[in-house]
Image 1 (cartoon, rainbow, N blue to C red):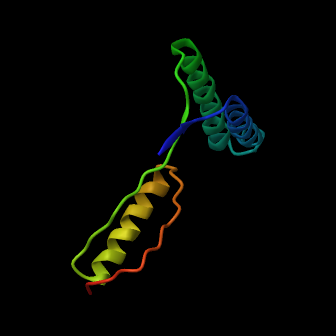
Image 2: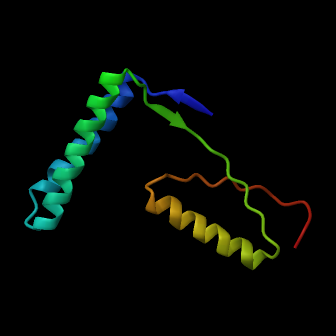
Amino acid sequence: YNRLVTSMEQRKIVQQAMRKNHMMTTTNDVNESIKAQNNIDDVVELLSELRRNKEPLLHTAVFIELKAITEDKLKELQADIQMELTRSKISVDRLLLRQKEGF
């Protein structure tokens, strides 16, 4: 599933990112300030590229099916996947289905 991000949604996303990073630039921690300024620069560059190339932003949903031999292996796999997605700043909505067979 995917859909275009409306201009209103895009504006809101950008404003939230800028607000969050602007607050971080005013902190006393030099590393945080530098990181925040780099994030702001990235947002500006992204918007410039999107406008220059007339590319849209998309909301995208992906379904990931996990399979494992045992329940413990499945839980370990779920934890690994969750960690990787979180590290990549990808939000996750767990879809809990009841298993009919196995284990």
